[in-house]
Image (tube, rainbow, N blue to C red):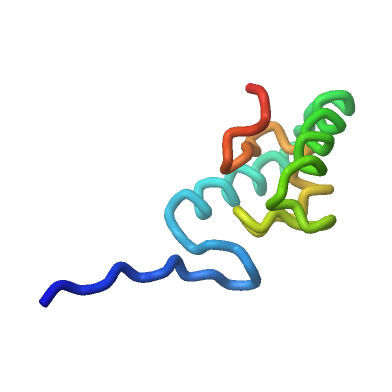
Length: 85
């Protein structure tokens, strides 16, 4: 008898996996080093998020991130590949 696949673990709405750990490390480095994208880029990213069905007004349901902070980080990316690179 085969096993059923496990649902991804989440803590506080954030999926816990290797990619999440890499993303959080990149975000921490951006914050510590004082790195940020241009305000126009952050605004463009937020506009994309506001039009996405996974955005609940504060957080992304796909990655669990608080988008007001995430859109300003250079290492951040959309897990659904909706942000331009």
